[in-house]
Length: 373
Image (cartoon, rainbow, N blue to C red; front, side, top):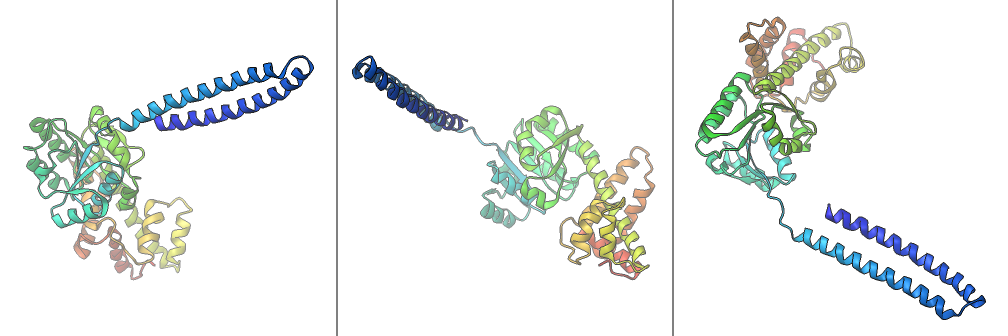
């Protein structure tokens, strides 16, 4: 800010100098003519010389003041950077840690395979640690793990070393009820505030700081996390208490899982009537059947037969299951999602957990006898 003010005032001074120069020049010209007619040249030059000396003096004083301000700002100690620990360097954790390091946070990284943390540190300027206890200095802990089971295990190991006042952000696509249990344990045993902060936007969004972030927890914890969350996504939203964000993330992914499956079946049906799959997707994306599945996943992963690993099939099945099981705890029937869960369970058995979720479409292709391409 001081540098900005310095530059702005410098420009103003230069402008004023030019203005005064021209005013002085033209006044001198007029004065000379006046003097020739009524007074001596000495009075004219004396008057104009006084003006010039005043202008030079004012300029020197302004430059001296600005120099002091600039020198003070340049020697003032920098604000201490927040230390952020990222636990889990998978598809989402690694680019999130990269974004935080790039944003200037002191970023510690831990992974169950230490080599991955070392590689991240070498490539992105983070700092790898071997033991979870080495993360005790962190102001903010971020977990990005396969499920809430792993988050709970990590929390149990870290409770003895965490400092009161530490903030824990769980970006895992987790269980709402388990998040509430983890939050209570961290708060009661270590004085640590917990926010469930699942994200959407894929590794690309994580690497660019463009994630959609939903948060569940207290307003105070959310405001404390504002700087870190803002580095990861432009508009984080607090939607409720602990567990609410994980519930919404499960709902979102359950909808995506339904869209993928429904689109696959519908397009396969159309193809039986001779419709080209690419044409079908293009038309659907201009009509009411449009969805993120038809707009992104079908053209970007399925029609081109690339199926790049972006979001695991097992992770998708897990998130649909979280939605169904969370509903059952309230005796809420979800007949559509229960059916969809069964489809994803079948696909998981057929292709495994580690392939991209888009490969589930191959089960529909097998039933229909046509490749969607």
